[in-house]
Length: 480
Image (cartoon, rainbow, N blue to C red; front, side):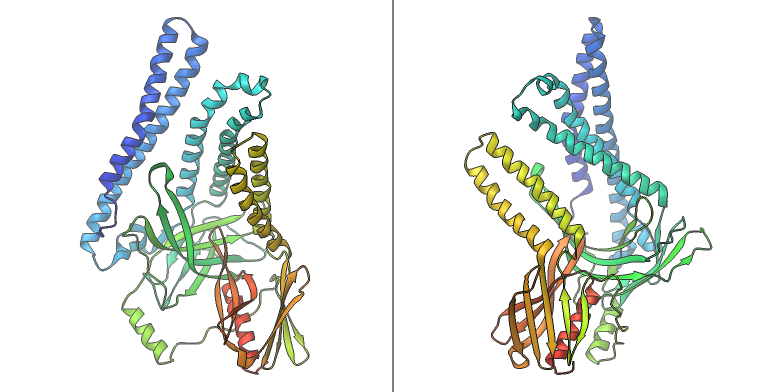
């Protein structure tokens, strides 16, 4: 077991210490409720008793879950000792080759977090109800922020409940255990209910670096996508065993990607397989943590690559729903990246900008120290620039034999740069924006002078980005 792994017993002790104040609050509320009931003040005793019981029950549930985690941790440590060189056997689901989706775990977490948040924030509303209904001081309405977040968390939990009840349990059966760096990962996603989307399933494989920083109340966890590939599966079949749907999955994994690694709980590498589809009501979405490691086959794949024996990828066909337009242009081609081609992230950042503007207005209205409006105002400018870019940024790339012309602008491309083949050192892909765990890709032209020019930004599909990159490289080589 790696030195970076936090001891399960230590984690349990930290959880117990964290929950001790909550048990104390619960006990205190029950004691006060008992005293009020002894004096016959039932109108005050009943709410206090209910609050204490619920508060204590949630804390007890969290403690029981922590104990279950200790048991699981001990079992895993035993498996690590038995199979030190085969980490894909450390988890029961990985060892069986059948991985259950994270839906039920997400559902449990959603309800636990939503209930906990609302239990903590509700007393503030109850105790200050008179101020909220009678006071005209706008500062009082700051008390509503936490319950408002609690309401959104309840909506999330209810939505996850509907999704779980609608689609049941979904599993991913690996064709080869484990997935291999340099080779790939494949198998079948099997649902227990029939899912027949008209446009097929969007299936995505991601290598994610999950980083936890800070300590105590300031701990934050972020997920950085290091690599991602996505495809649309339209050839799916009925599952004869469950009556559900079987979705075939196959992805190649480059040799330069890292394997799963959770030795350091604050800096983990995980591989996530996701499948989603637009269906009536709540959309279909499942996610699986899949085992991807380096094995003897990785060395074999490296040898094949060095000898040029790797089979070429299948020919790419641009998805019919792609917003990027590629058209013939005389002796060449033109690639147009239109504005507002990512409405989801654009709407998201617009809503965030509206909320941030509201916070800035409130700071000014409440007379906060000047430093706060200045800092929030600077960030407001950056957010607004992002909003404008998401809705209006566009570019067009004209490809002629031995020449590439890139035009960029807002709504209409106005700024132009033309590069001859001799001025271009190469064309590459770089990471664009990340929305949730969805990674977008930029196509970058590198000049012999050491400068870089973004030819197209935030391409949704990596395979499409590589295809567009190939078109530009063909033009540079004079093969348009």
